[in-house]
Structures are given as structure tokens and as C-alpha cells.
Length: 192
Image (cartoon, rainbow, N blue to C red; front, top):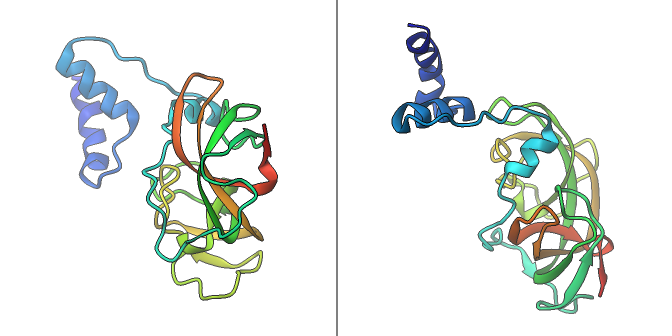
């Protein structure tokens, strides 16, 4: 009876496409008869469970850098710590683009906890941003899905910088193979 009530409580979320991981785990447990672990923890724990790879598809209008400091294929060391296991690892540059890059704060569309100072989204990933770089404090909608609940979220620009951004491939110190990770800035990587 308790299981039926729990499943019916979750069904409202499933209909609108926002089923929780707990609901998915319950369904898998019911279908396989095996007990599935329920990972409920800190944002850092959730970060470790996410796939940080990208498709490699860049937003419309984003232009490849003509003379990047680190050309595609270059080996670099990552100084950024946006994701678990990223800082200090070797990476291969898989793309270099000249644009304005932003750190943003937003509340995820999937009901997750508010995110502050997320690094990075590029100008071309914002909805109708115009040609000029946006100023800190500007509110806009983001059209990128780097993280769950990001695509379509209303965001506030925390910082803006005109620079070269890089897409990179690396093996995290956690063992995760990451391809086409978007984005790191030129100041967040160094030559090997």
C-alpha cells in the first residue's frame, strides 16, 4: 500500500517530464527485483554522478578562433575546478572560439536548488542577446543544457569577459572520460 501511494505521488511529476532520480530508481527496482542505490547527497556528490561530456555541437553563430593561443589538438593542463576531478588534469583542445563568456546564476527549470556563479555560457547560448556583450546584472534566458534544468532558465549575468573559450577532452581524476566539455577560458588552461 505504501509503495502504491509513493508511486502515485511520483506519477504527477513523471507526466510533466520531471521525474526524479528516486522515482526512476524505484521503477528499476520494481522491474528488476534488485535494490538500486538512491544517491541523495551534496551538490558535489551529484556533480560526480553527472556526465560532463558534450555533443561537440556548437551554438549557431559561434565563430572558431582565428589565432587561438591553444590550437585544436594542443595538450594543456586544466587549472579550472568547475567539475569534480577537473583541476590539474591533462586535456586535449577540441575547439577554440572567440566570444563573450558569462558566469550566471539561476534557478533550474527542473526545480533543483538555485545555482550561483555557474561558469560558463557563451553569448551565442543566450536567447536574443543582441550583438553587444551583456552587462552584469542583466536578466536573460539561456539556451544551453550543460547542467540539468539549465536550458530555458531565466538567468542573471554575474560576470562577462570577451576572450577565447575552449572545448576540451580529458580524463577526470575521478576516472570519468569527458569529451567536448564546454567551456574553459584561456586563463583556465596552461600549456603542458
